[in-house]
Length: 292
Image (cartoon, rainbow, N blue to C red; front, side):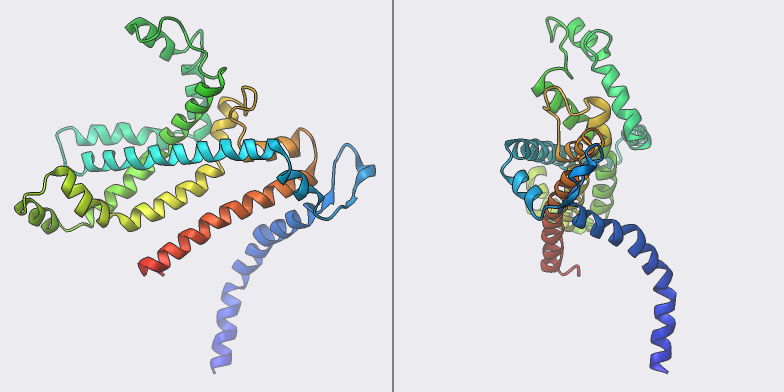
């Protein structure tokens, strides 16, 4: 009877297992295998097994470390902005001030717009000659002349960081707001009785109450931002002078402009391992918190 129940259960999960093997594990294994091959579409005569040569080249390349540094700056900056402003937004919306619904509707707009469309809107707004941001800043006297935001290395990287945070902020606010609703109001009342001010309540009640939410959202946001492609490619294409060229953009260019699928696969495997480190950290922290 028990064997029959086990067989029935296996048959129920079999379709999902087949789909998982087909769309996840097969491409993953194929990418691993391709990373050990010389595979350049425009030079098929060079195709063949080369072992770990691609990996040696990647780790000895200054370009890889530069793009990894850009990726980490982009990821950590964007996630930090999302967490800080997401928490501030959630705290403001949690108070039910007059006009909260209006603020809530405005904050959700970036989440409703497709990321590529949002990036193109920002690209137009940041345009040196026709962008509204330069016109407003020059009119207010903040800038003496128009700034080519997306043509300078520092301002281009800063712009894509802000836009990526702008797109991801609404979801962060929603999750933090849901977390705030779970903190018992009696804890705040007890803190007030003890004479705790706003920042003391934030430090000793709010932050500890949101610890699990901060951990989950911080880690998931790190993974998603590390893999961000649409916004950067639509705004700068990785330029100027590779100032916004993250690892994901580098992989895309290697595969679809240089047609070097072997090297692109090796870069993808390295990126996969880096992201796996985030996932392992996330699982271990959840295990410590007793969530698993």
